[in-house]
Amino acid sequence: MLSPTTLDPASVVAMPAPGRACGSCTLCCKVYDVPAVESTAGQWCRHTKQGRGCAIHETRPDHCRAFHCLWMTEAWLGPEWKPDRAKMVLSLDPVSRHMNVQVDPGQPNAWRREPYYAQLKRWAVSSLPQKRHVLVHLNKITTVVLPDRDVNLGVFEPGDRLVARERMTATGPVVEVEKIPAAA
Image 1 (cartoon, rainbow, N blue to C red):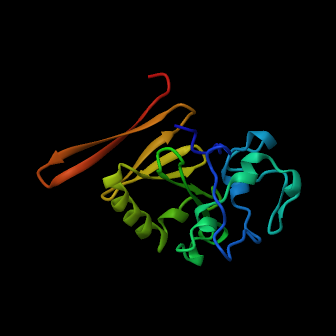
Image 2 (cartoon, rainbow, N blue to C red):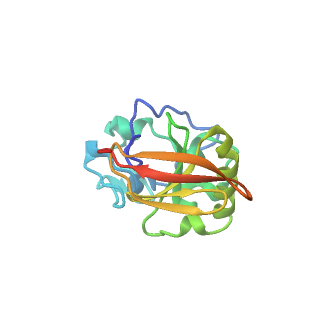
Image 3 (cartoon, helix red, strand yellow):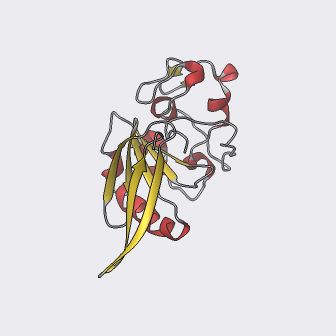
């Protein structure tokens, strides 16, 4: 599994939906690691001109050039999901198809506010049959949103894996999740 805060430009290929543009939104410039410009998740990239965009837009690295958040690519997401308003950036992992929710560390509880939290729970329910999950990332700390609870898995390092198992209980199936360290 890729580190949830590192973008792989070869695996993230998406086009903006008609009528969508970043505009003054630059939150992706804060919530992701971008080694090519020595940008660390949780801190603004030094090339970001808040409210205006990227100072090196024409020469920005492939990591940045190839990335479009779900709000940009999916017209069905309403204006409340635009990252600068929601204080979180949504993306899909190109391999696992897990939904990644990168939260602005300046607003660490943004994902728990409404209407966001209820929608994340609905996505968690609808993702289970496909063995996909909603993963909330606050810098390097990952929480899995499950239909019945949220599970904090702590810091995810490169190579760590998410493992989910379903077990039957008296009230029906329950999903258990855990982080398997890369060294295991």
